[in-house]
Length: 172
Length: 390
Image (cartoon, rainbow over all chains, first blue to last red; front, side, top):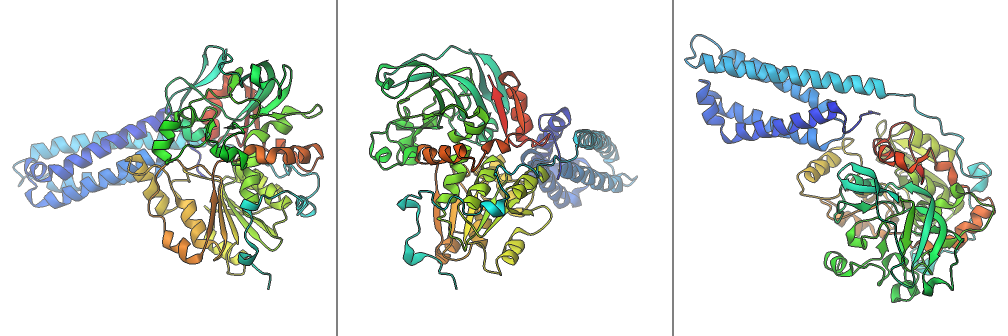
């Protein structure tokens, strides 16, 4: 079972990155063609749009799900994909090479943040983990449960909570 | 006085607030000696229930000593009486109360118009549980005003500790009603989703009411070990398939009785449908996560019963209702008619048939309440049930 502490600094950072992810994703979805042109990657507008959808899904996961770590790993993997895609466009034949370099720098910075946040989340879990408590003696009953089975058969069950006889399961 | 006050999502504070006073002739003021954080308080803490306002005092599971009594409550209560206060406020005079349906009392919700609009017809007033149910200040405080106090109480005889009887106000009768409304037969398998405090009470209730087999489902090791101690066969849903295991334990036929002791905040990442629910919830497209309901409907034996003590607040999505209709399932649900059960349950505690204090894992002062909300919500430190001492 995963242990995580909501409202910790790492958790807040992860949720912040979730909002960032949604913002970036929406921008990529809405302005894919313009972004592609700016980086000299006109043929790649569809790819940028699909990356935008990935960013939105990761962002929703980070904001909505309890344990942020799998989604942060998702972000790190997405960063690697972004870096590889940008690196492939960073060549002498691209007249917008400088813009690609700017984008590469920005993605690298965000990658560093993502890695830091993921590491903080893992550190937090390791620090918070304690062996599960043993509650196997907490029966609440004076005798073993097998001996207590049916001890309250005399309990008054109101008529409105009883199954009509005709609808009851009949033992085979 | 001091009280735990809701200020927003995951923001509960130990504040100074005005002392309560007698406002109506049927009121009483109770000095709280013990109160608890209930699983359903977490729906307020996480702000999944509508109708909370900044400054609301939380808490609906509490007990204490009567310190002031209104003129019309004096026939039933006197200063010095030791009482558990049920979370459902009931007048004892309306049509519903006369039928024993105390949790849908027609008169105790002072915000009736709001509830009428949202629910079609009002339900009872509840302590510390949103303005939809009256906006009554709750019992995680040093003092509480109890409306309709001549009815809304359980007198506690000498010789029983607070810890033994405190849960008569909510989780014990809630677990009991969840099992009782299944009309358990000696041949029945009862499957219970959720091993939190209500789930633990439900397990013991089902055993005492004579179920052939009780199966409890959760993922938290401590909760599963406590469920096993109470006589349940346990299923860790992170380690095995709930549906496959339930079918295996029932000869492929499914349990006759299924109980949802989880409610609107089902674990968000274990299955695709709960992830879908959580994403919709985050985007405000759905209020409750219905994974447990879907699983119960799927696995329950045809002509079986679904009992739902888990709290739901609003809208659920993608519920396969056709499956439920075609299998002829009976649904029973609702807030607990606490006082229907308390005389009988108090007698069982006195006779030693059950000691509900088994579920308490943390006892702290009221000032530590805000931290304990977080510990309980995050299921840290083996936390299952928190008792606060004002």
